[in-house]
Length: 435
Image (cartoon, helix red, strand yellow):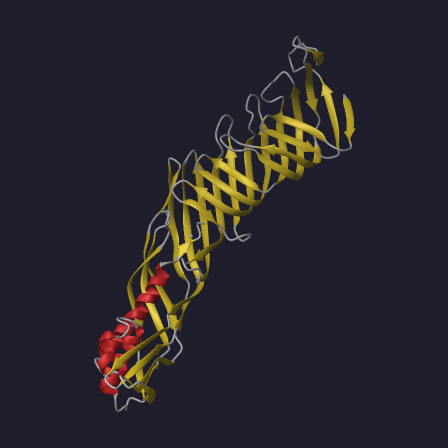
């Protein structure tokens, strides 16, 4: 037997795809022929290469690096770890696996990298840890066999049929338990991904937190299944209505109309989403069942008070008489709090990944009235300009309310405008699956 101490490192070359860089290690090797074989355990072969046959005594040491991979996957680079083995058989004449035997304990810290699970699935890992109490290297199989567990934090997942999923940094945990038999692919026997997703709107005014989980994950040779749950826990956004200014003349004067901008604040009243949706994988393509009729309730609030100011002035004309204000009706919002309800549908197996919104309602009805309606020139100065004023906008609606013309109809128009703005905002939500 030859025993030696390696103070810095030793290279345990198990195969082209499984190599461990050992820390300070005592290595004991017994050079002997295999049972029933006649040989020279230490010799030079006819091609000039060195031949060593024997047994490496159990190894227990730390690891300083190396790599490991499984069929169809990229090599995973190692940073550190621990290793314990039983006796290992050494035969340098074997080109695929010159060292074989049982690994009783393997704990590996993997460097941050992408893990290509197969041609259809890629995991972007912030940190991963691989452990096994039951792994082995066998003859003529360059990949390890046995059971293993991989866990850690991941930053993104790319899968055929779902696309690229960007996950909230440092907030998504990944765990799988897998196994492999000789000459076979890696099989995921169970697994889960639990974490958070970013949610955004096209105008980037939305702030939201979404949680998700993929449980009961099974995957083998491009076929698999899982259960998927998704909820938006809280969300807030804003709809900014534009300000406007208009001047409309009438015989003997003019009306100056100023529309004030309003910030309609939207806030999710309670979490919404779904649980245990079926995930199917067939021929490497992932799909998640479409979710329909998800109820959503959003609180909408807008500042009360003046929204339209109408300054009725006399003057002007051919004599260029200076304008003088004679009255100034204010259109005021009376009620500021509303509830937005809708049904939402969500399709995840699609590149757009947008919510579709329908059956939208806002309660209660929009309410507004006018201060200083008793204007002597109200009919000429306000009612006469309604038709041509800022067509279809808030100013026209406000002028009609100030005029007292079709007040109920105009309030309904304002109600519908608020409903439309809120609906567009919620409908623009996208999962930052760049979800």
